[in-house]
Image (cartoon, rainbow, N blue to C red):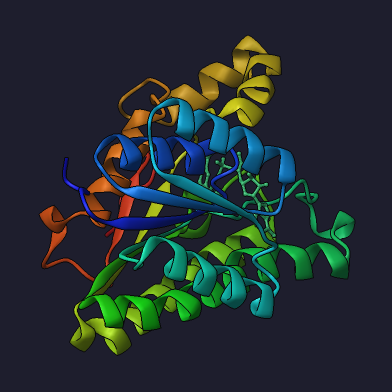
Length: 255
Ligand SMILES: NC(=O)c1ccc[n+]([C@@H]2O[C@H](COP(=O)([O-])OP(=O)(O)OC[C@H]3O[C@@H](n4cnc5c(N)ncnc54)[C@H](O)[C@@H]3O)[C@@H](O)[C@H]2O)c1
């Protein structure tokens, strides 16, 4: 019960990695608030969390909307009493094309806005509540696509996920004196529901090529991303801030 008495806000908590993280935080004692743009995701997430006996709230919010984010975060803090943890998982390449000639200015704006500005707005809204609580932990979401050159995602995603690392380090410097830690997770390919279908549809040859690029030679379990996120969120990482944790089976190794 590492998170007993804590309140954790999880963006993108209406599905994928965000919901798995929310469930695990809840199982270890945290009260959870999920923020997600997808109303059906919020409803399904709340059903899952309540079914597991977790104290949970949900808000339908687009993280690009600064005013809406601040309103939702303030309401959650008033309702649940505090905010200790922010998991900023809302993001992705969001169905945008990979290749330069296919990417529109609107695609570029969406990927930059959801990933970078969304992480910024949610962090900015949570920091005052963490200061009031005497400290906190923020986990941002980079990607192997922001650490290296992914063959799957394009320039907007690479730029956004690399940008999140600059945001993470600068914010960590600014809020460190308030006992707020800020770290990034950089996952490799994790087959959440959305991506499992894509992987299954690939040819045997392409799947082998993916696996051959991973020194551990296997696809990960979802829990193998969730556990490192919980480590960064917990007091077990109490002297780690401004760091990036690569969780990719060795596919990218930082120098
Ligand atoms: N799954 C992977 O292999 C992988 C790898 C590297 C990085 N990541 C990162 O991890 C995070 C979660 O990925 P996932 O695979 O679980 O994605 P997902 O698409 O399954 O879930 C993302 C969630 O974010 C929500 N969302 C999207 N835009 C939003 C917005 N504007 N405002 C609020 N919510 C919004 C979606 O509704 C969805 O519930 C993302 O930031 C992604 O880039 C994932």
